Length: 367
Ligand code: NAD
Figure 1 (cartoon, helix red, strand yellow):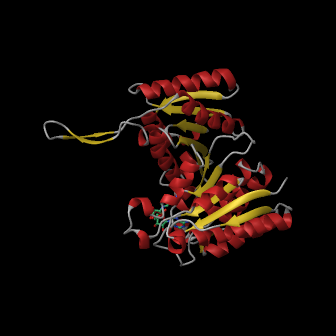
Figure 2 (cartoon, helix red, strand yellow; figure 1 turned 90 degrees about the vertical axis):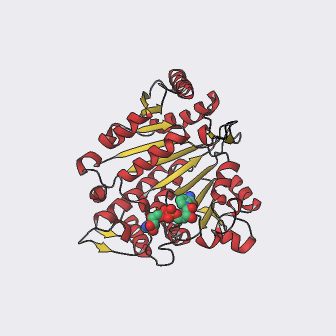
């Protein structure tokens, strides 16, 4: 493999703490698998505000553009809650998504056997669960025009948002879902509300056409979004890949993540369009935030960050074996009974961030 450029942006709060544990894994890859990266690291969020007065510098966005993949920690710092919305630490991630054109958010919801009791659902409903939600992230009702709050002639006010999708916006995110399904269990469920929304009707038509043209080997089903919410709780194992728009994806991916128990366990990826030179902008990050309530205490769970790195290896660098190994090492450590505070159960061994990171690398060493 040619040397790949990796940009690491730890950010604020627990971001740098959990990112330190990824460094153990990259060191292991170099030591044991002869895989090295050209790694650059920079400041974002409150850390960048403190040093440079902005949540993210143009220079960092440029670095992200030319990197083969970006591994992001989390941003958000109560010390900056007094500044205007456009200067908050969180602007860093929003700007990166926008500038790199990251339109497809991938959220796996996978249940590790050892954590099956951490979910609020019954063990037999979620055991072995492994689903992937693909959410469109730059279109739909959060960005559609017209939008705003207007005052009507009678003095009453009216709030307006518009759900808009074009053929190409739907096709590109559906393509991501079909391609992913081919590497998983070959099944896609497309979710909209075509019974009451024209944008949903178009969504269904475009996905159906694309499937017939290019992906007829993949099993395709359609489901209304309200039914999907119900089915995710009733029988989540029926799904492999779910593809949906921005609004429904926002809700359904949060619902699906809670099937697995803890925020500290869940990775994500956001992908852009494949460029002319074959590269695809991609950013990987845990779904949790900077957790200011526990920052600096050395107790944060580093697994979501480490699994985000495993996703990066899988989807940006096609290192399937190494990604599988990291996921297996996480499962093995959990099976030994080690737990960070957020996933602790009575009778198990409570450990801090660094001990969890070390234990994962020890399991990797055994493989
Ligand atoms: P949060 O995810 O930071 O924390 C929610 C709760 O989960 C907290 O009690 C926290 O201690 C716990 N938690 C989260 N990650 C954990 C981990 N790895 N190990 C153990 N416990 C963990 O969400 P929040 O409190 O709503 O937000 C805090 C800050 O993070 C805010 O400024 C918010 O804007 C920001 N945020 C950033 C991102 C991002 O960078 N993409 C995402 C979400 C929130």
